[in-house]
Structures are given as structure tokens and as C-alpha cells.
Image (cartoon, rainbow, N blue to C red; front, side):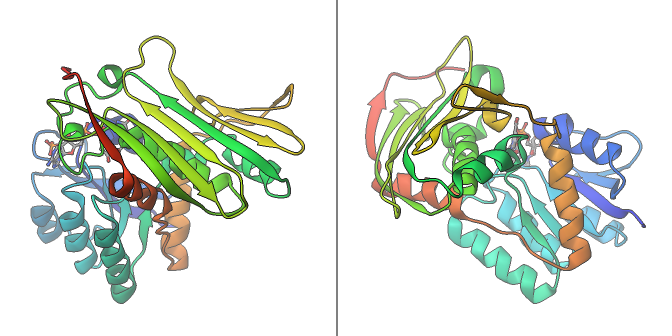
Length: 308
Ligand code: NAP
């Protein structure tokens, strides 16, 4: 089958760490161009802006937008209007309604829009979903605690409006939660800790209710040094499920469930290729909606200034 010609937009950490090597390992896509203001990729044509790329390379069929959420909408709109299939890194945008607008545009232009949630492709997530589906859940607790200095060195956009702060990793937990639960949850309370010198939160405590009656609590914190914690624990009528290490490790009761490794971004690009070839969309806004709800309901607490 012919490869889909792809352009990568925003050659930063995730584009370099995951998108480029993963696409080059796979058989579905070929990177033919990039657009980035300050970085270049060897072996392909590099542009500074998407507009230049679209004008010079009409052969590009799809674009992967790896820029921060705030500039993503304008780029996605240009690409969709030019008839390109579009992959959005997570979170898919800075607001819920701008992504809804993109979804409608993709349908109108008859191209595929894929709002990705890479953590949903972590190795143990599907097995966790299958375990929970037929069981009665009693409670869910999420702990997502990491060291922002280690994972986001020098990234100022995460502290600016639209950068999401601790919800940048926290939304990964919410993307797994909304994938593995058999019924929806909705936020009932939130506490958000904003460093005095920052516009986005460094920590959050979220409480959800569920239509099925069980409580969900989530703690996100960016000040964790030492071992990092990315855990979801669900108590059920048939044992405790522990999904840890960002969705890659699963223990049910005392049993360690062996799961074959599949890199998240390989699965993500498999899905993008299938969406394009099937003429379909995949835009699930549930994780972003929960973050928006946290900003709507959250009680703001100012904590000590945070320096990188
Ligand atoms: P990053 O290292 O800051 O890279 C983003 C790139 O986008 C920048 O290097 C920059 O390249 C370009 N860009 C265009 N407009 C920009 C603007 N207004 N402000 C800043 N950069 C701009 O960020 P990242 O960590 O790759 O994250 C990008 C997206 O991927 C985020 O939505 C993030 O949540 C998601 N993501 C990140 C990770 C991770 O491990 N880092 C994992 C999964 C998902 P030029 O200056 O060359 O234009």
C-alpha cells in the first residue's frame, strides 16, 4: 500500500522523541516535510511556517501538529482548509469549543481529524478496560505526581494561559480514566494550586461523581522529586485493579498481569492510518471537558512561587 505523505509541524520534544522515530519505523507514513521556526529535520524539506509548506508541497496528504495547544487551532484550520488530514497532539486544543469547530470543519472538508490521547495506547489500558467492564466499581483513585523540572525543562508555554499547567500530564490520566470506565463521570469539586508567579496550576485535587454511584478522586502534582507516580487504583466487587506506570503495568488483586509491550505512538499512527484510509474521524473531547470543568469549578489557592 502506498505510504501517506506526512508533514510534522513543531519540531520540539514530543516530535523528536516520538513522532519522527515512530513514523520512520512504520510502513504507513513517509515524512516529506516539516514546519518549525527554530528546528530542522535531516533528509526532508524544512519550512518555517505551515503556510509556506502548504504552498510549496501540495503533495502532503497529512499533518501532525506537535506544537503547544494554544497555537494549534489556527494551524489545524489552515491544514483542514487545504484538504489535509490532521493529527492533533494532546490536548487537542486550548478550548473545547475550538476543537468542536475543527471537528465540524473536518467533516465538511471530508478529511480525517484525529484528536490523539497517547496514554490510551499504553500497553495495559485495554486489559484494564476489559476487567472493569462487567464489574461493580466501588471507588477509583488517581495519583499522577511528577517532577516538572525533569519532564518540561525550559518550556514556558506550560505556565501560560492555555498551557494547562499540571493538567498537561494530568489530562493523560483523565484520558485513561474515560477509556477504562464503563460509565461516565462528572466533576463535582476541584482545588487548584497556582504558584504566585504563574498563570497555570502546579497541583490539583479533583473529585468526581459517577452515574453508577462510585466516587473518583484524582491528585495531580508537579512537585514530586524522586520516584514518579502515575497510578490508577479501582476497587471493585471482584478485587482491586492497580494500573500503574502510566498505564503500562497492571496488577489485579495479587496477580501481576503479563502484557505484551506495544509502543504508544506506533499504535497511535496505526490508528491515524486506519482513520485516513477509512475516511473517518476520531475526536473525543471527554478528557479536555473534565479539565475545563476543573477550571470552572475549581477553588483557587495561591502557593509559593515556582522557579524552573
Ligand atoms: P515543546 O518541546 O515546547 O515543542 C513544541 C514545539 O512547537 C516548539 O519546539 C516550537 O518549535 C513549536 N512552537 C510553535 N509555536 C509555538 C509557541 N507559540 N510556543 C512554543 N512552541 C511553539 O513541547 P512538547 O513537549 O513537544 O509538547 C508539544 C505538545 O505535545 C503538547 O501539547 C504536549 O502536551 C504534547 N506532548 C508532550 C509530551 C512530552 O513528553 N513532552 C508527551 C506527549 C504529548 P519552533 O520554535 O521550532 O517552532
